[in-house]
Length: 317
Ligand SMILES: NC(=O)c1ccc[n+]([C@@H]2O[C@H](COP(=O)([O-])OP(=O)(O)OC[C@H]3O[C@@H](n4cnc5c(N)ncnc54)[C@H](OP(=O)(O)O)[C@@H]3O)[C@@H](O)[C@H]2O)c1
Image 1 (cartoon, helix red, strand yellow):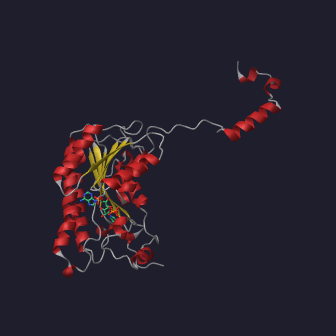
Image 2 (cartoon, protein in one colour):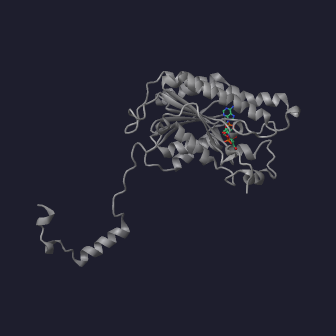
Image 3 (cartoon, protein in one colour):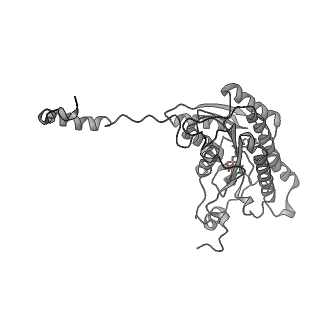
């Protein structure tokens, strides 16, 4: 029977109907909630491995991967306690699709530990689609270049340059062995599938300059060079390599340690064109976007998330 064939009188609801209708509206949603799609617009649907996931940008990157649709996240760094806390916070997101987490400690200055990390992740999840290396040492040896402590510089480079190289090497060797991944509804001729994506954390310091931080800047320039070379070396083998280069971001790495923040916080906010510090989430979300198939043509890019610092204003109002 078509709707047109129902007589008008038989379709007029009585007052009980209206009462029930409005009652239903306040006690239950008018429509059943739409189940979250398996694949979100951004197309993150596989396994992410985040190094440095215990705090700061790494922790928020892990949380952002979870919200964006990753099915599993490997959380790595040197401290079990903070990594376990990140795993707990991912669970507390109460996402429509559960996200499996795995905590594996590794020091990126030690190649055997990094190889072990990838091997454990592979045994547990079979493949890794997105590698995000956020581990880094900030403000370890500030001062004018002639006064710098060479040993401290070497320690900082061991993480920010050599550790970066180790992660890059191990990740590339791992990704080369897996088949390109297709994301349903996204990977197609327009967004070709890849074996995997690697996003490293650089710094806006390589697009501008931080005074009194030669050790840090040196490591980040080395990292930028490696990232660009590696991106070209593997561009035709289905591995996308990029970096996110944050400006001043309020994280434990900045506010603790040897950094003297007295007066610096206000000065940074005042001289950054956007007028404030970044939140770690603002850097993390760009890491996740660059990892996603929506960024499929981005290779060897360093995306500055700096509130305008790389624009080099001649004056700030
Ligand atoms: N915050 C900023 O303003 C800013 C600006 C530009 C660039 N960045 C870059 O963004 C990245 C993250 O910075 P953040 O501010 O989030 O730093 P953070 O708060 O200090 O966090 C760094 C993380 O890296 C881990 N880590 C350090 N050394 C490691 C090693 N050798 N092996 C494995 N894990 C290690 C730390 O955990 P464990 O100590 O437990 O291992 C920690 O979870 C860094 O590469 C940094 O250079 C930050």
